[in-house]
Image (tube, rainbow, N blue to C red; front, top):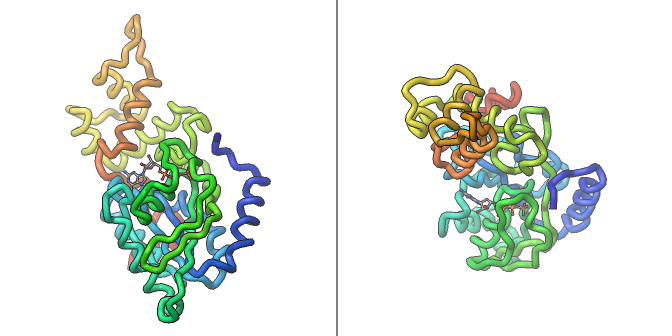
Length: 287
Ligand code: GTP
């Protein structure tokens, strides 16, 4: 399924979630630790009302740990919110979440009642992987392409935690053009939604500016190219992406750069810092 959200889809998703929210004690919003701003959806605040929320910065194995620590501080300052960095694909890591769930809804725990949770998040942030890791078995489908989570079952996670059976899939936050590019760089929106080469050029420019040493190491560069296009050209040359007649295959070079980023082969990289996303955010991260 192509991940293109129309107002109708958003309305339906919001309505579905609203209908069952009264049966939920705690919301778990899953985000991508590399792009917390663009993978967060402000509609969660509206939908959860007074319920507590755990913001999970998932895929933290791929993100810059210093920047993830800044994001954790930033989110933890929000009313009723606790934040946790996780790598759902690492065995056992996700279970850190279960004790936090119990801590955040003590009344139900004291009464011996299950804590009813709903996992929410935009496509491809790792909701299914997290659900499977929490349940200790494969119950939700996992995929490289966005929007695999369609219908979840009602799931008891053990330890008195129950998961809602309504899929909490939210639409990506396209706050601006940059958000769109960053979502595409991480793979949260489908490759076809924006020109693939443009996405790679966006990544190249960002990496040249923020993580030049990682580029030098990964591609064994002697000096740094002076533009995004020159970097792609160089990556292509180093990786044998020349077509007949010596013409550079920019599509293949783009693929290599994006794959290296998405798989973590370039290193631990964050595309967004709290300080980038507005004055109040910058202040929050500074103290
Ligand atoms: P939708 O079904 O599209 O809503 O996606 P989802 O949010 O359920 O994501 P899913 O669990 O299918 O994971 C998407 C991709 O991210 C898969 O290739 C997972 O293996 C990968 N993934 C999930 N969690 C992590 C993580 O913590 N680290 C890394 N490196 N990859 C992860």
